[in-house]
Image (spheres, rainbow, N blue to C red):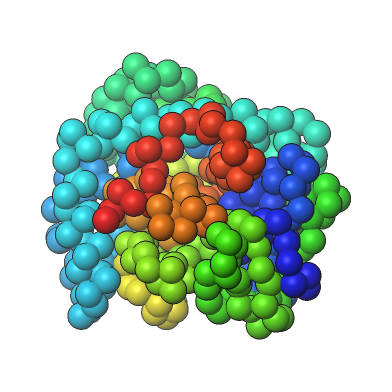
Length: 419
């Protein structure tokens, strides 16, 4: 690994890979380092997420009513958003900030920000997909949200109507229309929403391909290099201490996901990003499963076709760095797939995965320069949207590193907003 580089990108997930590609395409001397021996490694939060690109989904994690649900779900380890009780100052701070963000005013203010990011990233995904999409199984076929209760359907339709006022393209489907179009769907339903703008892809193939495109554009991609610490190196430069030696960089892009806060502490910033454990289960894809993802609203289960596999996901567990696989969560995903498409819950699985996702307390990503260390750009906190927002984050990082005015207002995403 080089001892000096113009821009050092730390993290080989979709945000880091897209950032390295955008920087290299802009002509920067870039080095991308990943702690594992592969970009998008098994521990990466993007390795096995559900592969959805959702410009239509605007509600942040911190939304009115979520906190009260979280308190109700606190004692239920199978709930969609489980907060494992533990003594932790960082968790206490995160929950305090989360509580403050769970207001109607804050949620409404966040939606246009998320929409701007989502629209641009969907355009970038589509541009990349037209040229390279066969490499990562890219399909722009929309997504269906199915609701099995009248209350769930009513709430979803009201939210969809609200979001159409912000430019989201969606339409209501009656149960009859859903069954006519997707005859394999078996569960009882009271209503559904079809999101025209949604697309899906294989996260692993996408991230590896983006790292390959970055290398083809001139970036150095180094795997098996764990960043241990960041230190000021004089003249505004930053020294990265890694397991493959030290590197001095003119600028550092921190795209290390849930590991980012640990590296920032050496620079005096305590970023309230918590690792939230996500789950996914891969099973054999039924022959009649369409090339369209489905979301079961009340069960909080996503089903995404990825070639010959079907990926099930949709739960989130705020449990620190606990990597335990809770079988109740896996069983909940399997039950949803069985009810919806008759995929027996006791059939063999191809893979069960869990891993940390970087969750910010207000549900918005953290993108921007550090005030006290201007040569460090933070790109993390994307919650479950790192794959979706990878291309737009990469573009914004390249604009910041190149001294250009960012094409999207980054004030709401500033790392300093939690100070």
